[in-house]
Length: 143
Image (cartoon, rainbow, N blue to C red; front, side):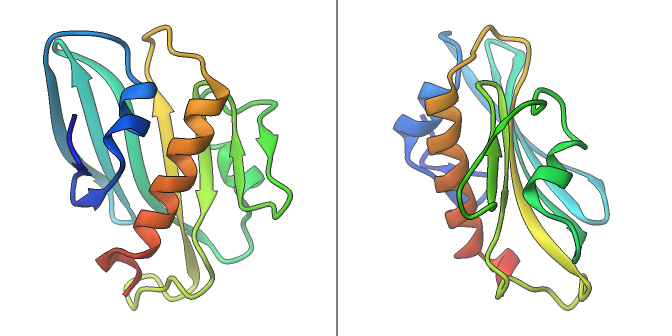
């Protein structure tokens, strides 16, 4: 298990809990648009987990942003409204101090999405989402 996902340090045990079993793990970074960086993990050659950093408008919130991602319908919203998750995916809003000159009117969100692997574990997704969001807040993306 990697200790870093595309440059973001994450506890390997949290990552493992959100992945199906298998023999090999590979990782690839993609940038599908100007405001998103996605880290895709594949198990035995099949995409299993995607972790993304995505900039969204200032007025957005985790519940609203989650609507743009699969498997977040009817997700559990945290008391502070920063996180929403299901057993397969989740969205976390970084702290307001997380800004970038390239995205002055936007907030950075962390996204965790399982692919069609049979993983459906709300506890594992919540723990990984919170840890990943906090790690993104401490990364170069928020400086």
